[in-house]
Image (cartoon, rainbow, N blue to C red; front, side, top):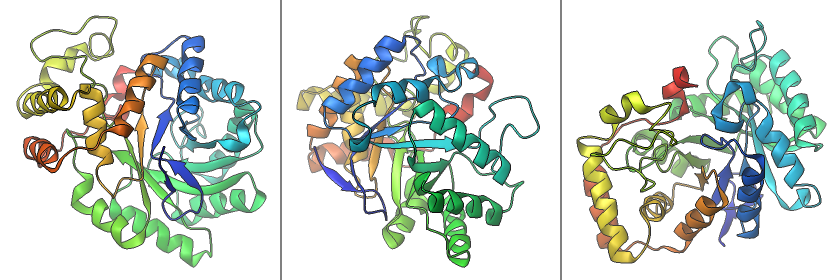
Length: 333
């Protein structure tokens, strides 16, 4: 297992993390096995959020943090965990956002569910234009000074917004954020435009989520076959499947299948190995729902794509901006 500095932070983390979105999981026992498989495989970074729960259902908010806290009993000090704040957790006027009120309240709730006294990396889940950056990052820095949070990061920010955040933190003499978490895959190469040059210049890390494009590059789907209704794209996202896996997305999937056959790996492994082949990517977040999926994804860490294979995948996907992440399907939750 390769361990690297977490962006500009000194803490070292595995190049793959397990994300606990659990979009296709409602069995706590299998979820626990997935986490243990990740840890036993050498991963020391688990990515969570206050809104994560089984089946990515808002009715199950907090269940992922509770499960993680259960699994980490006795091994908490060896694992780096993240959690997030911003998304709606209820109907109240202060049940979402990045106000000091919401941040301070939600970190306490997350700590309780996790059964720990600190969150290693606390991430602002989305931009909140209704609250000043001064308020957001003063609150975050207070949490760092209190010892409840070790590092700060942001999610779903553009490069200029990260630069703006760093500027405000500098003015406040606050600890600067160390990482940004955004989607990146063969079907969504948006980060290459501005974020890649930005992190090269600043050292800020990138946590790449949705490396399998919400499962479309997992090998489980084919464009000419309607997915089984037990799958994510055959159930909650069935109505848009035909509009997503078509055109150039099909060409990309075919290219991945060809490379996978040539290197003796799975489609999911090759898709993730391509993401990891970029020096700008600090950590890839595996969205495995089961221990079997986690074991397969771990195999991506052992794949070194040849220049020829990488070029083939680059050519098939160049310029694609098909943004696939949970926020695009909020109505499906």
